[in-house]
Image (cartoon, rainbow, N blue to C red; front, side, top):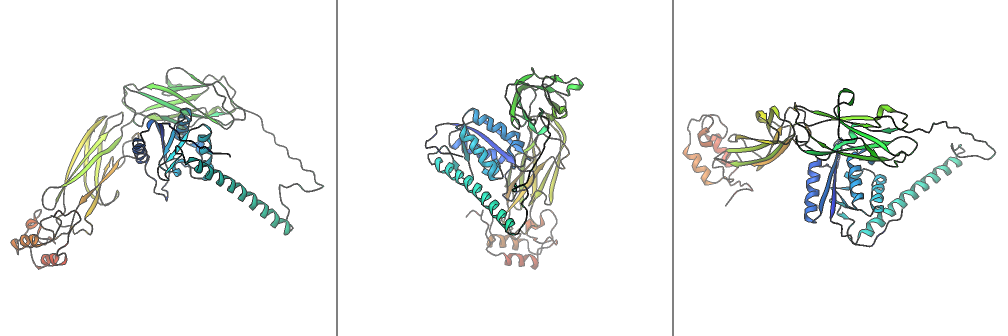
Length: 472
């Protein structure tokens, strides 16, 4: 691996790639949307024109070939000699070997790599040192493997053990492997992706298909057909059958793309991709030549959330729910939870009808009169489509949160400080009988229906307490 360059690139085009692991990682991986947002802000700051955004959700980073989003991102980056922008190298690959392969591929194509977290930018003049460092790691890994193998062989020889697989003097070894040389093109549902997350009726969208050559021979002129619906049940051919010219080497992949005008429909639709629909190439396994995905669905997200103090001990919570998907939905559940996404439920709502590309506002008043918080801010979580009863085009953007200003129960004036103003208000309600929800102007701190010495003790405990949000 010889990698070095000593130049400052002037390329101003970028391709963003993000990946979300199928399980929780110790690195606290951000969602695909959050990664894309950070990378987009980085590109805006660097004045880079974003020409493509690709992602893989619930995909392992062990093998690059198993991630259609990455293959599309690399294809576009290399084709345009652009800059591949990622949130971190761990989103690109989870092992050194795969990372180096990707870096070599970009370097060979005179494309570049930027990683936000590690502050790696190969467009800068110091990029030669980055590539030299990668090359050193490759050499070190190769030498370590060789050294360990040699040490293991010597230990076995000293112990008088036979080392399997290594020819010995005066012995004849004969191995026979019978394997027919065959072609085998394949595709799976995870290899099919769309140019946008939400497919809207009456718009055009690119459908991308990653096809794999699992056979032993290179393939050329491979026909690919895209269908709206099952081709065996009156599915409609999208445009014409396209041909991937190739050659597609054994073990390699290729990408086929077609543009689809999304018609007006009443429910989720199936998109099928068929390799060699008319059987013009030899294929050892026809069962893996077809794959399908369901598309066009609602997509709920919490577009915004805010909170405000609307009087002593009351917090007004406003949340805006958006359906950015291609279909309307009925009876969309929305829940407000305290502390965490699975914390205690404060309120729930039912949106009877939420049309495509529309918004719905919810409003809730949270009374905190009886709460004695240890923190000055509490997160409230808004969750759309709970309990996850509606199929969506994106299930990962249904949640958002807002930090709500709170305080001590004895802060009767609710201004973020316990002082003589609170004591004066308390004294004005001394020994009064109290009922909900006013609780004697929030001075019956323990809500035992009377302002008494128990409440006075609360003031004494927190005397001169002050919240960080207190305005002098």
